[in-house]
Picture 1 (cartoon, one colour):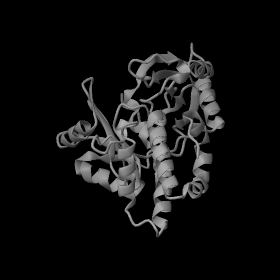
Picture 2 (cartoon, rainbow, N blue to C red):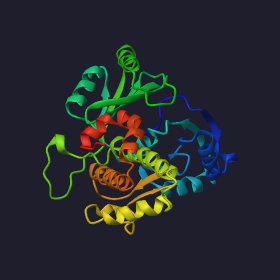
Picture 3 (tube, rainbow, N blue to C red):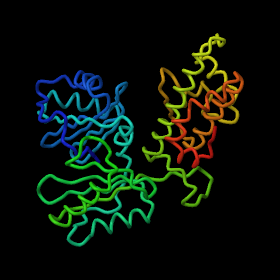
Picture 4 (cartoon, rainbow, N blue to C red):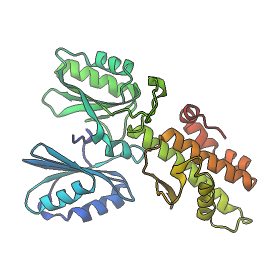
Length: 332
């Protein structure tokens, strides 16, 4: 399912006839840093998500069939040569772009709930109590107004509103405004969830489940680790007594810990840190990934007698991610 921000595009109503799509993508990577490009034709629709470094994901829909990933990008590029698309371009906050890029994994819970019979405020409370990880999509009246409310394990992370400014808005005022508008003008609600994945062979309670496929959890953890690694790398590089390259030291430590954390084995190419960027492709829960990487960082810092310095340097980071660190049992 193709989901795009509800905010006004930064660029709208471009005609694909005049455009090179790959160059358009490259241009707005530099211009916006992160965002989405929406393509709409009478019988086809697509969206491409990107950050400043790479194409993240794409979805292309035609005749009830959807394709994702690089294949979607290739299909859009091909379709533009024979079809006329209207193109809108959205700026999306870098901290939230990975959430948007992975919404396609969501599944229907409720479809086409009319606000005539369903109270939006009550629906929000119900989804909170049911620990929804996903979103409520609200279309208001016939005025192209509406919003998306995003949930992580029952907690509202924020919303995307047609009157918003291009970022995930966590304000209670806009949530209340969405409820008010739905009561006044009527509308339709759709609720979708992002599936919860449980480790093979394990039975877990709701509170112990690791929401691996929820982008706000997974990519949020990668962002957390990335910011920590950048601080650590700079600290190591500032010590003139350390002559070995940071990448080499980190790789060696990962090899040492690979028996305990197989995803760290450089030869599996599951977890990597390079050019101040974290990437992970694997089946290990993000909780275990976080613990393993932090353990490596702490051991390496201790070996070079800079654990206290690292702890001090990470104070703003620790404050920012305090809830996540407590959840994962991580401390410095």
